[in-house]
Image (tube, rainbow over all chains, first blue to last red; front, side):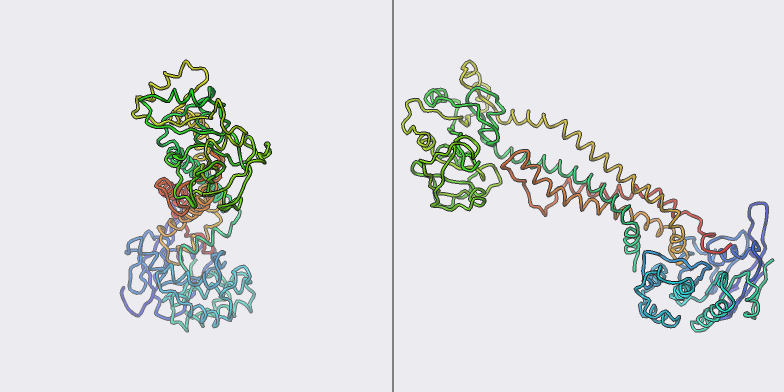
Amino acid sequence: MNDPRYDLLWQGLSFSYGSERTIDYPDLQIEKGSHWLIIGPSGSGKTTLLNIVSGLLKPDQGKVIIRGEDLYALPPNKIDGFRGKHVGMVFQVPRFFSALSVEENLLMANYLAGRAQEKDRVKYLLDSLGLSGAQNKKITSFSIGEKQRLSLARALMNSPEILIADEPSASLDDQHCDELIALIEKEAEEFGSTLLVVSHDARLKSKFSNQMALS
Amino acid sequence: MNLFLLVWRNLWKKPLSSFLTLLLFALGTAIILSISNAQESLKNRVKESVQGVDMVLGANGSPLQLVLSSLFHIDFPTGNIPLEETKKILRDPLIKEYLFLSIGDNFKGYRIIGTEGSFCGWFDCGTIEGRMWENDLEVVIGAEIAKLENLRIGDEIHSSHGFSEEGMTHDHSHFEIVGILEKSGGPEDKLLFCSTETIWEVHGDENPTDPEITSCLIRFRNPGGLIAFPRKIRNNPRYAVASPAFELNRLFLVFAPLISFLEILAWVIMLISGLSIMFALFNTLSDRIYEISLMRVMGASRVTVFVSLCLEGVYLSVAGFVVGDIFSRVLNQGLVSWLLPGFSSQGNIFSFTSFEMSLFVFVILMGILASVIPALIGARKDISRVLFSE
């Protein structure tokens, strides 16, 4: 279980929605730096899996091991901090603290994870994502596409070992879908993060060699 | 970047709602502190003014009027009393000392008090710039008059009859300013003092056959005088006596119901301010579920979320207290001057009373208390389905 080759693995995961339905997830071991696609239709349990893997929803059975640490063996008050430090997340609908500027939003990721605040890293990430000079701008002044890139920048602020992207290509046309996935993969590659993309979008099947299908 | 800044920015996101809540807190604080400080100031000032004056003897009339006109110079005197008969009455072993006052003229609305050279032992004169009067028509003036009317030692002034400057002017009498009193914050700052003989002379009666004065301040040798002396003059229809302490207590009792009402009103406003914080937080909880979820996903614990929501209540209540406190200090000065003209509020404007400190702690606790329930609900929200897609 504590194999240093794997950044993330789960084993025997099971979650039940009351007495009506139980989802049993196939075991998975994700090697450091690898890129994985979890694909499945709506209702297949993708969201539940994301919640479980990110420490937000305790499974009924099974273990989630991140960087050799059994996530749910940690005291509940440590799980949040652990997630902040080791896991970066990109959501389908990018959300931000609307009262804060771009730089403040990104620095918040440092602050809430209990890390030193790195303004240089904010600049570096914004530059590398084609958003140079956006530090002091309000979030409301950006398009959806730009917000998705900002969301990616925020997820990378703490140099996470694991980068999780939830339905990143939803509502994007083919061209933008290709660009965004390429960007996420490039950034994950550059920062050495293990990438886990969760989607129902069949267009992504051709982009990932590592896949797990939920039904 | 930190939690405090995030909370601050969140408050600015809804400026009107935040401002109204802050205003309510400020209003409650200002009323409570103003009443408390004005009461304290008034009581201290009044205590200082009546200190050492056991009784006031004057013409028959309202005892309160007698006290207010002779000690605080804010009401009309009850009339005049004959000097010779008064001297006879004052020949009493119970009386340690007394001071004659002749009141009835003014300079530009400031009252001129005819009295004796020993008046500094009765009023708070401080140091006199210049000298005391030595001759008739020499006058010593209060510090505020000198400042407001730009008067200096050696200047000449004319008095008017009565207490308003529209009264008949005594053009024939030229007062010379020989001294200026040090500022005390009491009524003497806005009074002019001269000899009793000067008052008679101004009224064209240099050597009156039956001279009169307005009132007389009395100090007894022992408290027994307070009981025995009034009995002595009870049957004399020309005179009235009044104990300043007793009369002022009665005056405060008149104000007591109004003060109580204002205090209750202020506490109700404070309560409403607390409730407005609570409702404002409740109303915004559904809007901010995404931000709460973001915080959690980025590593914040439930405790951090709880603290951030409570901080909003604390920020609003503390800001309301600060605004209210500043406002109360301004209001306090006006309130004291309005209730007792001539008086100024006591104390350093930058000093804090123990009551203010207690109220500050109370306000913080109220801010926390008002936020606790919505903060608990916010912190305990199940965020597992908020940010991820279905």
